[in-house]
Image (tube, rainbow, N blue to C red; front, side):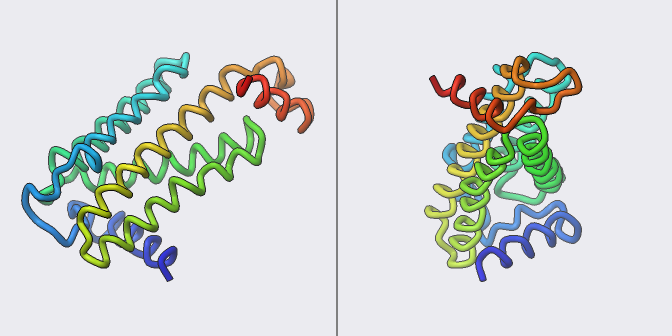
Length: 182
């Protein structure tokens, strides 16, 4: 099953093969602006985050992604493991934020980026380098756009929350999302 295979490989590379690129190919053929350069798209949330520390974590994510998926893609490097650990944490963080500080339905927006990882893993298993490059680039694109939307939503909808930060009602959180879309 592709989803379980992707989860198994992710877990294996988080702990056992930390420095591995986890790619079946070697050499410069792996280097791609689509698959690796697209990691710089994680700079997009910086534009909507008012807090310096939050801008910093997105800058770190973009840097780790670019170093792992473009600069060091063709050989083993500590940046592969650092990128996987940090990216996994950022996905969990975004889903948590979407559920608690935005409308809970926004957590469903994590499905397309995660699907890109699953399809990319499947391409890797079939030894289809070009298809893997496309789907890995789509992972970076969709995840960075999702992150930007979630960060924009939580930083621009303060009027719809109580002083404690809770949504005043599901209807108001939906109204905030509608206001953003208009």
